[in-house]
Length: 341
Image 1: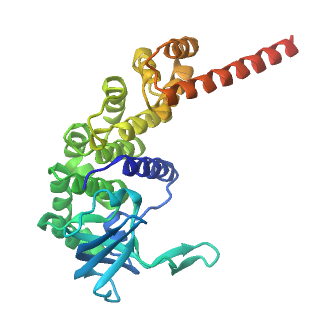
Image 2 (image 1 turned 90 degrees about the horizontal axis):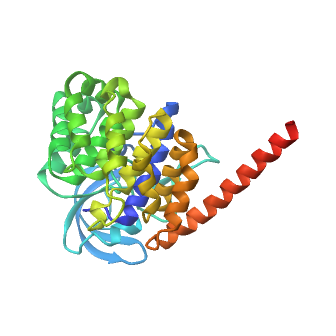
Image 3 (image 1 turned 180 degrees about the vertical axis):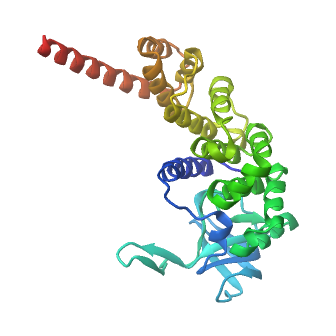
């Protein structure tokens, strides 16, 4: 499966939430722990039907983990991004749950929607091609004891260095979310993680997740994230991506955020160019860094972008609104100054 635009948006939301939770120490289950958690099922099966309403019907094959044994046909609610990629007749390994959290009860309750495909960092969603490499990694992560083994570590690092985008992302999720695995990476695989995060051939979601993790956990992964985030922001094309899988918006967004958190300076021309792009969220991040590090350059950069006849409509609207906000801030600052004189 490739990461289409809808999946990229979901990924960006999850990743930014992950950054906030990681910074505060809030726990998130690693993907393989979640797949094998009580109440969840991991099943191999082929697609019988793709329902545009947001469901996929699978013919049950081997049950790899979980109880009770599901029926011969499993009707699963899936994210919209899956509908464009899942193919009738194809075999997958998929993870799903029959339950959902209930804040009032403080636990899990039966989901009235029935089975729902699992979605979390490292698996967005938990729908994998049924290939030996996938099965091997899923099996190696079947228990806490298994995840502490040398074989599990080696399979994670092999997946990260391999050429399967989903396995790369799954491996990145394990490194990001499993503290014990990060300790082993610190001792043995830091250079390999850095190499994967910098490699243009690595899946973009995996690169972004590793970059975010390194920025929040430099003790384990090193401080290479600073130079890499600056490189991403200053050299990534602003637009013109050939397809959804090559759209680096999520990686750029994470780079902007870690640079903002780390007070790392970016050359002004590396920021100004994002004001001419098609992504208002990236234009906003660039404006914020301009204001922080080069306050005198922010307004002229916005005016220059607005004078561009090729400026995309959504970005033009954002910059118009942003300029009005700056006008209000400047007026308020002048009023405060006049009042104090």
